[in-house]
Image (cartoon, rainbow, N blue to C red; front, top):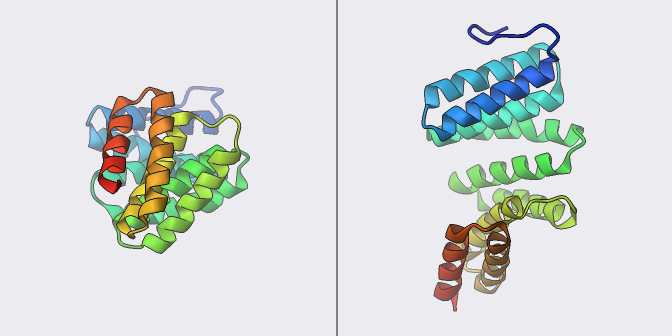
Length: 189
């Protein structure tokens, strides 16, 4: 067990990994990147130690998010690439969609728009088909595809995607997303 991470008797490793990931996410939100990284590294190590691909996918994704926030896109890209096949082995398509979308974001940010497009297309296919999808997660997958289409000069496709994103952000009650989508639509009209 990594130093400074208590393991209570009877806790299954997957639950401990999830607890570490949640602590890391909280630290990241509260702008404590060192603490976030410590928790995420511990989560990855524990998941690897117990050979738990589902927990490892979650921990890798969490660590990749922290690395991305620190501007270490090369490390984040490697971690997301490792997490995606593990997600495919799991039984939660929404986790796969979320992870693939994040991989797409890093690919787009590092200058690989075509590979990013494949990731976004896969994520959107899952979200469109899944009845339990959350409007915000779905909107957050539509948004980068709209950005990509706009960047590639595919304005009609971008406009349609921005409209979809706007409606999903409205459904989720995220006014900033509604405002951004509306502004982008206005620029494209």
